[in-house]
Amino acid sequence: MNFGKETETLEFKKSTSEIKVAMISIASILNKHGIGTLYFGVKNNGDVVGQNVSESSLRDVSRAVYESIQPQIYPAIDEVVIDGKQLIKVEFSGDSKPYSAAGKYYLRTADEDREVSPDELRNFFEANKYRTKWENEKSDALSKQVDKPAIKLFWQKAITVGRLPEGRYTSPIILNRFGLVKGEYLTNAGEVLFGDTRPVSLRVGIFATDEKLTILDMKLYEDNVYNLLKKAEDYIFKNIRWKIEIIESERSEIPEIPTAVIREVLANSFAHAMYGSRTNHEICIHPSMITIYSPGDYASRHKPEEYIKGNVESEIRNPTIAKILYLSKYIEQFGSGFKRIDSLCKDSGIRYFYENKENGFKFIIYRPQFQSDILDVTLDVTLNGTEKAVYAILKQKPDSSREEIANKISKTVRTVQRALNSLGDKGYIRRVGSKQNPTWEMLK
Image 1 (cartoon, rainbow, N blue to C red):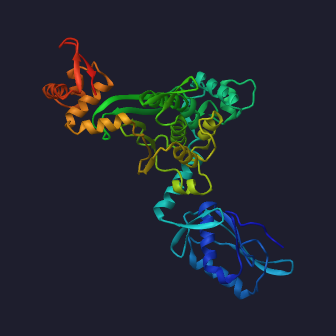
Image 2: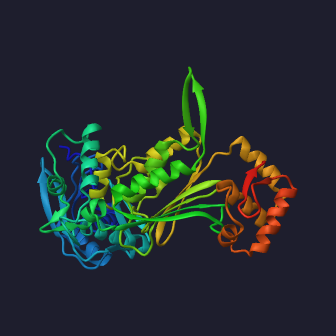
Image 3: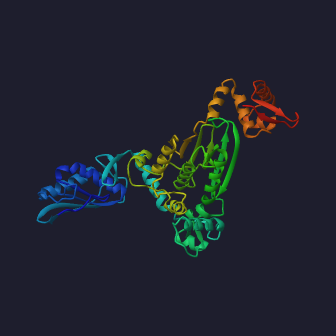
């Protein structure tokens, strides 16, 4: 007889000679699911081979559980006979997580047991507690405090892309269908997705250098996630470089970073964020990179490279939010964000990096170097830091006054004037118009 495959709650051991690793499996299953079953006398491919079962062997298993698993559990340990072969069946459960085996902590991944640190285990439990409770909790927003145009835009787009069946929809129908209301109130997920209470904050900015020092532009948007995604896209697409290509007499505008890359990173940023945390969503556009920051620590116990290289089980912090974004095609494939982003970047020759910090997750997209950038780098070696900052501001807004520039770079008006004079002497800029209301022409 064959029992089939091992699962996240079912483990096979050929005999009690594997009793130590069996304790690891019990601890890892308890930590992941809180309940499971283990058989001695079954190969890992599911073949029943049997083993000698006696009072002594049953006591050995009971003693091993008592001595190895902490906190203490009380499993049901019995002899069973399958096709005339003796097996030991261990059924166990517990709700006092985390459990350790011989002082070490483990988590179940598919049919394998992975050792983790106490901090990693704590993050796992916090993420799961957040995922299972937060979205469905009642918010302070009434069910009527919704952005009806945003909800209508959602169902129209979801129908158009074929992910929602055609039909007659209204805001109450959508809210009830996807569990976004609880009594007279929106759930947390409902408010974040479609509330008109300005529930989510997004800060966007453009910087003169790769440091967050000289600000060329800064805006704060407060809105629901569905609207913020569009605002975030528009801001990035407006402020990156586009080139024009003529293909078979057709004029095409090509962005320096493919729109699919931007959209996928943004959608995953909002889908996996921890809402109500100490920080806000943030997008920073620098000369050489774009950073997209999502509040809350990284949502999975698996590293991003594990998702890219393998097919590990996906973990989604906010499944309801992710589902809405998937149905409206902001997310292309449910639960495969990193793999898709990696593929899109490789296809486009785009480099990327990520930083997992205590309060949030930052995704960094490096901007490709255009020929004009290469020339600018060569020329800029003659400029000091203040001159570069002033030049960057004028390139963005040629009619900036000395006072505006001084305010942005935290320098005096006299310092700005010296930089303007120097840039003019070096052939970078030329004043057009009067001294009182100048506009600067970029010469390089």
